[in-house]
Amino acid sequence: MAARPPRALRHVPRRRAAPEPRGALRLRLLGDVHWLELRGPTACEVLTDAERRAVLARLGPDPLRRRPDVGAFVARVLRSRAPIGTMLMDQAVVAGVGNVYRAEVLVRQRLDPFRAGRDHGTATLERLWDDLVVLLRAGVRAGRIVTTLPDDRERPSGRPRRVDSHYVYGRAGLPCRVCGTAVLDALVAARRLFWCPVCQA
Ligand SMILES: [Zn+2]
Image 1 (cartoon, rainbow, N blue to C red):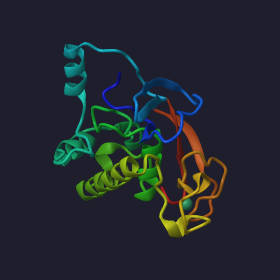
Image 2 (tube, rainbow, N blue to C red; image 1 turned 90 degrees about the vertical axis):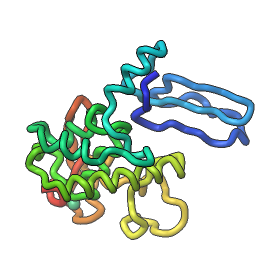
Image 3 (cartoon, protein in one colour; image 1 turned 180 degrees about the horizontal axis):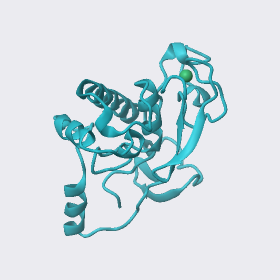
Image 4 (cartoon, helix red, strand yellow; image 1 turned 45 degrees about the vertical axis):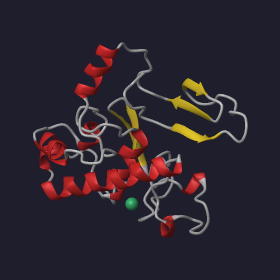
């Protein structure tokens, strides 16, 4: 199994039977109390101990760790000509950011996904990192990915609805929640990236 699944890892009390499999479900573990699903991972393999250690050794800093090495992330990005939208999908640069978080953190920080890593300032990259920490922690707490602030939702109060959960992810052709421009999408690092061409210019 991959060291960290890039997408939804569900972990909820088993008050009801596990649902019918949906999406790209690759692994399901069932216990007496909990069930856990791995959906849409880039890799889902059984590894030996040595292979597991090798995978972990390749990973970049992890925003969910207590004292992650932010400096390693910043230094790595500043050395690269690759677009920031590509680098965020590279687990050697930062561990644990999947396709939804990539699109959402870039729009929240108003960053152009196609700007080269080395063309960013240190302070910008540190803010990007801090926002990843906020988003990933919130995702672990909620068991789902919600990146919008209440005022940016069509229905600001109550539990965020699925259609209100993201700024740009899955919203190609729909108006940007901030400026109203149609959200664009393109394949970047083999996954569909969504962005606002005005907010992220
Ligand atoms: Zn916009």
